[in-house]
Image (cartoon, rainbow, N blue to C red):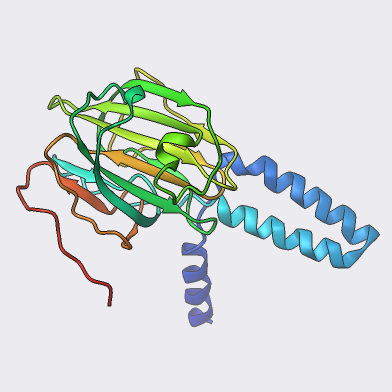
Length: 237
């Protein structure tokens, strides 16, 4: 009896809560599923599967965020798709000095809650309408619909985190506004379905992640502002 209870506890512990933004979509799909169970049960089962997927997509698990000063934390779950040195887009107001940009691609199976990479004050919030090309493409950073937040830290550095819509994504949601103060790892928004999130580091700083690596929002360390460690070499094995 106790082993069954322990197994049930384990299962429950691994079920993440659903973010409130997903409740309305679950409710609509559930009503349609119930309706089609009455009209034609095979379609009702299909819609029930969709209800389960929507709940899975909008899951919002807790994360354990390292709090040491100087750490830059991943803002999104997904695969690191690019680590480039680029000139930031003009809209960010970061000047023309090249910076390291770390791009994370989120598939439709990743957690889509976005978290602040550093603690500080949001000094700029910029929305840019645009296209919906594949978010994994390099040109998506300049051509796709996006929402950018520039966060100024207490040490005077400015970081930009950019939510980019993709082929499927059609809605960028941002919980935080210009002037708000955010803590590192704090939830600041989400993107519905496949998408991408870019982080621009201060000039001269290097990333501690590699292309192909999996990132966990609120936990994975992207960079360390207090370290002189050079860009890491990596290999796939």
